[in-house]
Length: 228
Image 1: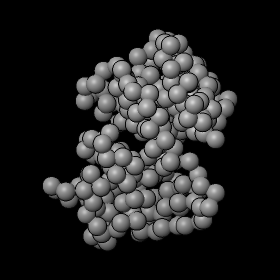
Image 2 (image 1 turned 90 degrees about the vertical axis):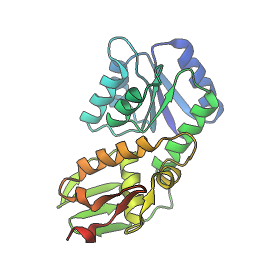
Image 3 (image 1 turned 60 degrees about the horizontal axis):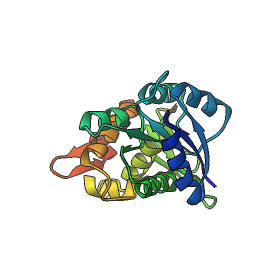
Image 4 (image 1 turned 45 degrees about the vertical axis):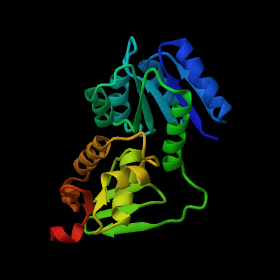
C-alpha cells in the first residue's frame, strides 16, 4: 500500500486530499510547510509527495529544489493556485513529476496519483534487465543509469522516459505517444511537459545527451548509433 506525504499550509486542503486518498486505499501523512516536509522525508520513506507551492516558512519550490539537491528522488505532484505556463514549467524543471492547479477536482488528483505510482512503484515480478548503448547503461530492475561507468541520479519520471525511449530505439515517437505511455494519460498533459523532461534528461546524460535526438514536427527518437 502506497504511503503519501501531503504538504500544504491549509488544514482544510490537507483534510480534503487525505480523505479522498485514504478512501482510495492510500496511507497518508501531513505537514504544513516545506521545512517540515524535509524533516519528514529524512525520517520516513514515502512513495509520493503532494506538495503545495505557496506556503510560509519554506515554499514548495524551495522544498522541491532542496529535495533533489539531497538526492531525495521521491515522486512529486505539485499543487499551485496559479495556472500560468511559467509556474507549471518551473515546477517540472525543478524536478516535479506532475502538477495540479487549484481549485482542483479530488478525483483528478487521485487519478494523477495513481498514474505516477503506477510508473514508479516497484513490481515484485520485475527481473534484472540491463540495456547498454555505448557509454550508457540502464538497469530497469535496480532503476540505475550509468554514463561512462558513473551512476547518474534521475527522478522516477526521467528514468521512465529514458527507458521508454531506449526500448523504442530508432523509432520517432510523437509527444502525444510519449504522454500516453510514460505519463499513462492523454488528456491531462501538455506537449511542453515532454519537452521539459527531455531537456532535463539530456542534461543528466552528459556525454550521452546526443543519444536523444529531436525529430522536428514529430517528437523525439533514441538513436545512439546515429551519433557515431
